[in-house]
View: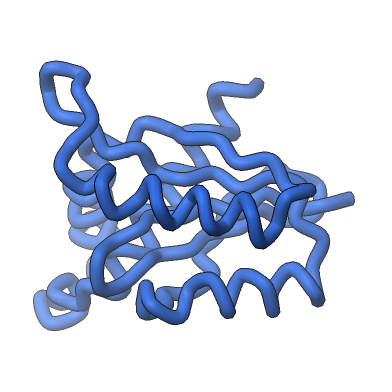
Length: 137
């Protein structure tokens, strides 16, 4: 069985999360520099079966796509050309950064750890993936 991989794409860094092979639990995978992301994903899919890729869709409060889409869409097009057999879906990512900070706070992380933007990106990817999994149940 394949895994589902989630991407919280950012201009500098991208948080990644992945499910277990039963697709029940979302867990943080890593944070990758965005310019190295495509290579990382190609290498990852050589070693792991990825059934689907979920990409965080940044929206504004009025439900319009945010400014970030001009960076995300070209990457997703390139990803689709590079890994054409893996379906790609967008999932609304509004408030994931806020939820990630809240989860870090509730988890008892020290202030210095909560300021780690790479960790915030990874946790945001987990939240995106968990949201997707819950919507399919």
